[in-house]
Image 1 (cartoon, rainbow, N blue to C red):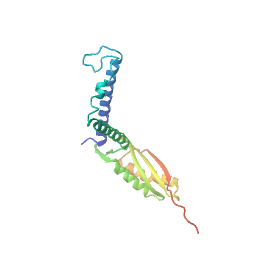
Image 2: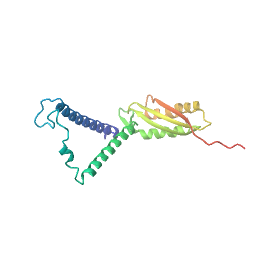
Image 3: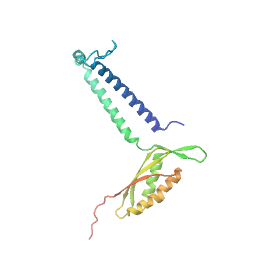
Image 4: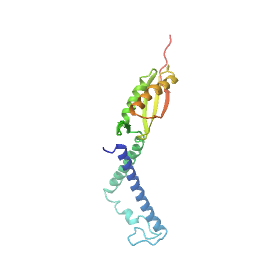
Length: 199
């Protein structure tokens, strides 16, 4: 069985964070060793506290070249885009992509989290007074949790909507996935509607 996408992303995330940490630690250690006038090898990039990170010659070396500034701007732009992609990936990964379902024969099957979310949302929306529902599956593959936002019609009873959600939709989802429990956080909101004209 192939590793789930979330596991692969988690490994890539840890590797990238580890590499960034090691590089920052090495660079910081090199600068600190030079600043403290510690005995450093001859190949060390900085030799003492009076040494600078970039000499005046190094700073002016490529400035007059036509390709220098476009290259610097392009590299920095790519780094910003990669950082934004990584940041957005952290938020996307909060949702559970798959969960393990006990098949009863000692083996386990994988159920896509999006499929369970869609079924739960359809069951919740089918209730009287519920205009729409949004479901997010979180937690671990063996212990999922749900966050449900119910948008209620003006005439709907919040108590009845919650009772229908816990008594029907969540019970069916829990039984279908073979889960002992399915902790849920539900948020109720009223649907905005225009005022009706009375004559």
